[in-house]
Length: 128
Length: 128
DNA sequence: TGAGAAGTACGAAAAGTTTCGTTGACAAGC
DNA sequence: GCTTGTCAACGAAACTTTTCGTACTTCTCA
Image 1 (spheres, each protein chain N blue to C red):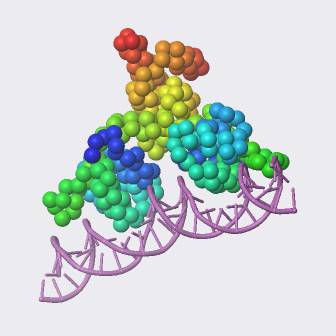
Image 2 (cartoon, rainbow over the protein chains, first blue to last red; image 1 turned 135 degrees about the vertical axis):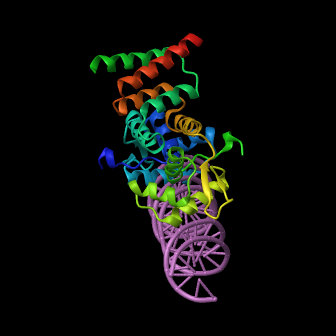
Image 3 (cartoon, protein in one colour; image 1 turned 135 degrees about the horizontal axis):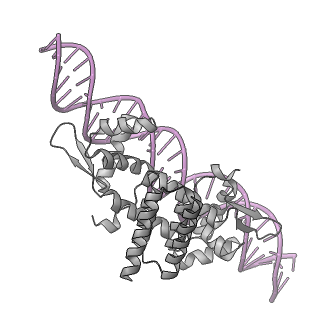
């Protein structure tokens, strides 16, 4: 499935993807235990989600062992980009700068990260 | 209902809110006609949505005339902030700078708007 | 070897979202 | 006063997302 027609992950799916991105390839049990740190979730719930996500192409499954191992199909960055695109259209009418400014306003950003943003801005201006 | 426990608007709800923000207080018919520019939507669909949104507190309804008039309860900016907060937690693990950089990367931002962002950054540094 | 533990598959219930048909109230014009 | 058009209310269908019970298989080890 091409990346562009990939459906946007739902909330529960994202929670799972975040575990996979941070832990790397994992079993159902491992994902479930990690999720339980923040929110109680039954084993079969996680299993079912991962099965559906496999069908949708959001994750890949290694079935070579009895205990299957799942990994995210798309990178964290590319999934985030897809989500941003969605939010941008849906809630901001495409006005990226508004999204940027809200993101900066919502939460104090460390100096180091502000510098990163500045650099990106510089680079963009140089290319324009 | 306090702003903080206000549920995040769904996709269809957001489409309606965007009309209300841009047109100001409007009747069901007016909202529906505006929505039809981009995507065919039945009258009763819009009506039902607006009724549900009234219950949820997302919009306010003026019933003094037979033809009711709806207006958004929260401002565009505060709703956007709420959405950004959600996306930030759900998909970015709270890393605002990543959200900012994805937003900048997704779509070319006009020079004028980049300048606005720079100004905001300057202001933030001065205050820090 | 057989009892229990750990795993997958499947189906369906529960919950949330979106759509629309139908009904009855009210209004406007003839 | 009757007819036609516009509107709100309601209920239900269709669809999506989330949750979990149950059944069956495989592995472990006493």
